[in-house]
Image 1 (tube, helix red, strand yellow):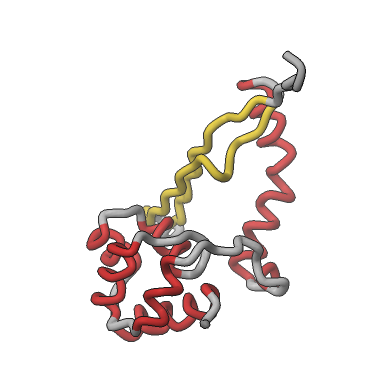
Image 2: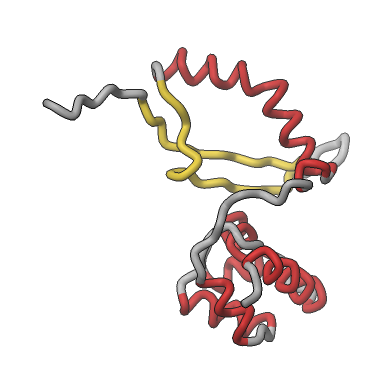
Length: 151
């Protein structure tokens, strides 16, 4: 049985070879592009119907389609943080994470932003200095709450 991550690498190769963008495939499946890319690369399960449709679009075999619907293990590969693009996201959180945490606490109170109940969008925006990458994360606020087992 092929792992979801190994299947994701093969799916990414097929997508590139077919000349199809994630946005084009996402429109075809009626899902957000960021979610589809994450799912196809192994971080979310697709429904059987979505997997079949993606399989049809990319000429995937049954083993790859089956990998798309399996429940993922969401642990990142140990060397993923050395990729320059992913490293920059780590760097961004290192620099701005404490400020964002402080702003969340200031605006919402003691709690966190959910990474489970969230949406992420991605856009390319023209700019005189060069096109900009715009990533928006919309996460539910989860307050810390003490729940007593005896109440």
